[in-house]
Length: 311
Ligand SMILES: NC(=O)c1ccc[n+]([C@@H]2O[C@H](COP(=O)([O-])OP(=O)(O)OC[C@H]3O[C@@H](n4cnc5c(N)ncnc54)[C@H](OP(=O)(O)O)[C@@H]3O)[C@@H](O)[C@H]2O)c1
Image (cartoon, rainbow, N blue to C red):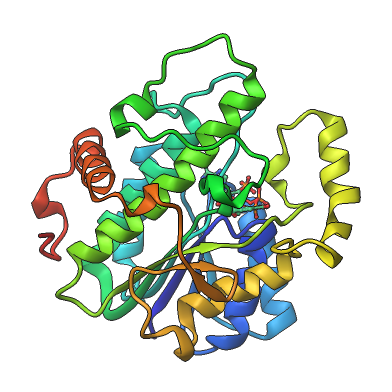
């Protein structure tokens, strides 16, 4: 039995992804990697009851702490089913309130969505099955051409994004830009990591769930905007392209990571179930390289921490 690790499965898209995974992967272990074991256990019980899957566990992982990421990787490696067939990097936040920092002092949106997620991926590489998949939940908001109404990303090196200088701009604009930039980073990392794993059969892809109103993502938006997001915007799915419910997006995410029909896709970007092009910036090799090198620098990863040889 191998393991499927899903981050951010205590709510929203990740929860629905775990539910679908329990249906399509009855013979593999599903690991709900969560920062709150009480919620994690509830989710685990709920999915077991609804699907009959017997091998779901939850393990502690707080992406606001690199130490917690290291501890998760160590604990996971010690448990019996420690070969990974799929890693789904789905956890993510959007902070539009005042700037917050991770335990190690990195700006929190970048710290959780990119830095800790990339660190987790690198630490788990030695445990990957030779046919494993790594899937990043990104977002169409990374692409200005998609006109999502969000502030467009501005690419900078990892150290600049981790330690931003404060400006007089509105918090909403700053928070949204940090979010869309972190999602651009997910895609730049997808492409760079796939290139570095080109000698292997591990596949790395990025996934845009579309706009999924009503999840916890808007949790620190002002109450009025939260109300609109939870109660009004869900109706948009009947009229507007790429607006989805969490069950639809979660199912697509699980399928992309695990179903046979996606096994030949490497280094691709998906809008829902369909492969499309990501933004122009995301294909910029210089950005990919700068982000990779500066991320490794911030994480202080030594090459020998990962047994897969990274070119
Ligand atoms: N909703 C959308 O419209 C939309 C659109 C495009 C992309 N996305 C992406 O989809 C992904 C899932 O978002 P969602 O909409 O489903 O939002 P959500 O309901 O808020 O789910 C986010 C998940 O991430 C987890 N998480 C947050 N911070 C964490 C941390 N420090 N350590 C570990 N786990 C943490 C949350 O756990 P807790 O329960 O402990 O908070 C939760 O399970 C995100 O990457 C988001 O960027 C969403």
